[in-house]
Length: 158
Ligand code: MG
Image 1 (cartoon, rainbow, N blue to C red):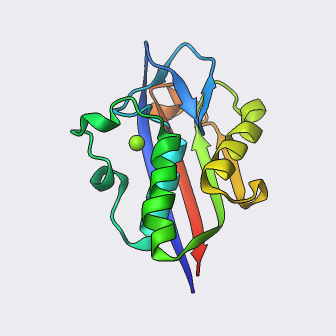
Image 2 (image 1 turned 180 degrees about the vertical axis):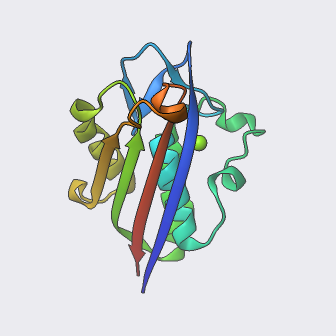
Image 3 (image 1 turned 60 degrees about the vertical axis):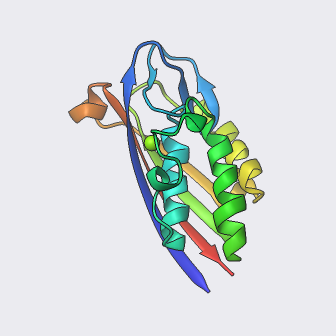
């Protein structure tokens, strides 16, 4: 049986925070604001997995009112979702495709490490994970450098 899920997330770029995408800390003057480490890519992947399982969304599993998840690594949240939602439902991931929309910095040199981090957390081959990066052509909240968006789709099977 195959199921598909899609995820979307947006976080605001602010001063005084780290920019963490796919578990990689990327040198930049701004970082993403959020209750956890605000890893927008991993959050979109988590929502895609939960969506494929029809088991709600990331905010229901990890409420931002719960101090256990304050500044927590989103890689930990991803592993938690794999162990407690995906595996227990009897499903495994076939592939993930994702797009990060960010005006700056360029992500090309970090993409391989992001793929490896996510592959390791989900215990799947690196070639099952695609991460693409685009700009917003200097238009809108992403284009002005005010936010970063990520979208993901995941195919699961059992
Ligand atoms: Mg988020």
